[in-house]
Length: 115
Image (cartoon, rainbow, N blue to C red):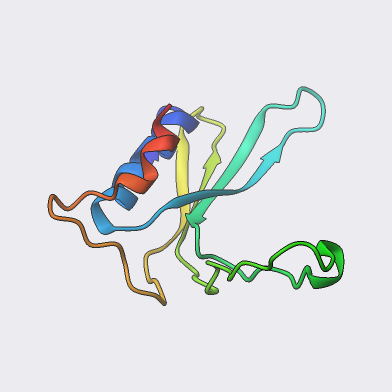
């Protein structure tokens, strides 16, 4: 699958996430050193990875909240090709957690990414 821009690829994945029932997190961006333009972008489920143990950093006065991270592997990687198109080079659709079910099939939690 290919897109005309990085923004088109992001919008596709956010729309997909909304329909399936998860929240998108921007995970990684690879840039070209000379001019700083983006060459690759990785997006994934917000439950990807695990939160580090911050107990020593927080101190006794701060309350530790439970982590929302569950080690989910769902992700998409798009790369800018020489043709100028953004091409999906990796797509993992499997989640290891329950997805958000809504009456209309859309998750409202991802709407902030559409700004």
